[in-house]
Image 1 (cartoon, rainbow, N blue to C red):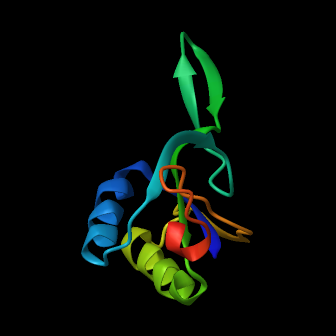
Image 2: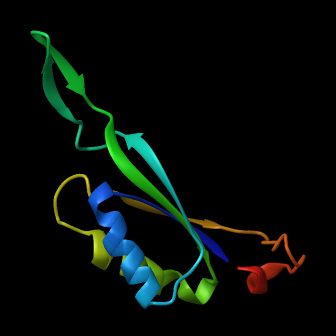
Length: 112
């Protein structure tokens, strides 16, 4: 099993949710975050002073999938959220040792 963490633009959340639903990918977690990468933000003016706004709003998606679904899931994320502009985000893939469904006690891939 793998944990896929994707940091995406906020406006791409709904299209990604729709794509996951259509592909029958279930069980994601979503969190609103602030981040800074190559984009480095922008300069805003507040009461006559320049302020560097380098923490931009992003969405973090976490989803656990079986090993055989990793590449398809990553491709779906990229195809759905890519704009080709700086700030499209990042995807991280990590190994998951185990998963336990609390309700039934089921373990492993069946619990995903």
